[in-house]
Length: 235
Image (cartoon, rainbow, N blue to C red; front, side):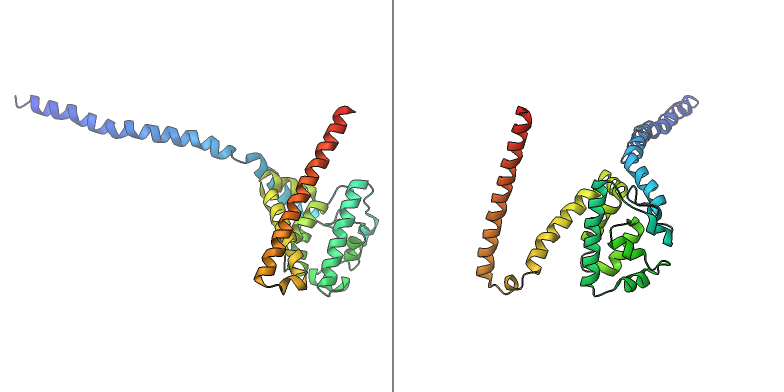
């Protein structure tokens, strides 16, 4: 009888050891199942961003030339396609307005950016060449201090659509678009001296009128789109 007691004890001890092992297996399986999901999450978009990070300093709008080389050879770069040309010219106008609003000359901007080629910014503002994304970020710290998000947004969409597509793949592009639109609304108020001097009551009345006008504009645009859709269907 004295010998059978240890036998029972030995039989119980393996049971005690295996219990935690059995409980640990589901957690390992769950961890292994979660790993591919985490790796797959945004994998393609992240790879796109990584590629863009490698080429930011020299990435330009197609046909604009290579802006990594800040030499006089940039003068030969041109943008001939209608779509990109119009986008670059619009961005160039935004850049020129920002520079003039800051009270800076082209030489001032070139000096602030520490450019080797003093004619680079003149070529950019004339719409002859584009801007690399890295240069857009640097310009935002100089010309877009009051509204850097909108500044980067406007120039990136025009000058570097490849980077913009990568941002959109991550969902960042939509956030920037919404932020930019909200700032455009705010800028309407900021640019109007009379609006800033309104009383609370008058401001509420003006705001209600603006809201009604905006709703009417959206309804009108919806009707226009619907009419175009019907015309295409009939044609």
